[in-house]
Length: 269
Image 1 (tube, rainbow, N blue to C red):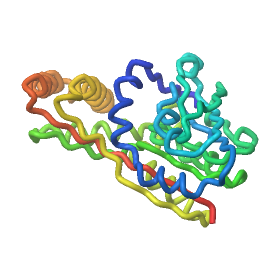
Image 2 (cartoon, rainbow, N blue to C red):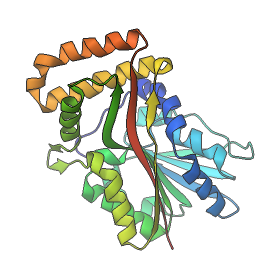
Image 3 (cartoon, one colour):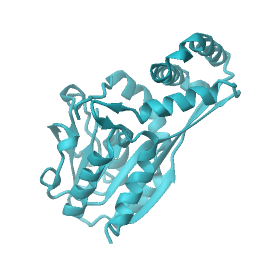
Image 4 (cartoon, rainbow, N blue to C red):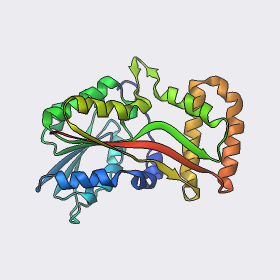
């Protein structure tokens, strides 16, 4: 991908607890039931520091080998090992590379392919390549925490819908010839696998954030507003007032935020 999305390890650490609460445990249970007994080889795309592995590995039998794929070697170097359902440590290796160039060779021998908070920053063509690679290897695919574009803040503010619309347009922006899928990604990945004849199941997996998540809310809010203003510069006239109003509510424990995501599991028939 020519336009690399910069992700700070601090952001990944900050969101990991909320991610774990939101992920679809029901879909993970289905994976655990359907996986063959014996060693599992799991490839995690856009793995960052390995939060998907730390959540999913304890829910699946072992022994497990995880291949973490990311362009950022510093994030991969910070990945911590996880234990499988039997308490055995998973073996972990890493591949530094561009996910846009991923093909079946990179997924050879995979028992399962996963991705978390990734698909919205891909193009349709890049997602099609991942689907083709999964089909070629016959590996089921579990995509977790893909944004849907829907956000609900309480108390409601008249500006919420304006900033949400601008943010979603930013998510779908074209950068250096790449048109990002943004909140269309959950539908697109489900349609691509369904068109290939695979069984597809989905689950809503929202972040539900309140006072204990104040640091995460503040960081998310800043990024949400910043992206909206980047997409629609005229909003800068109101952004500071809107931000101050919301941060004040957060400081008084008056603000809750729901950020919708969707998990998708695709399984070959």
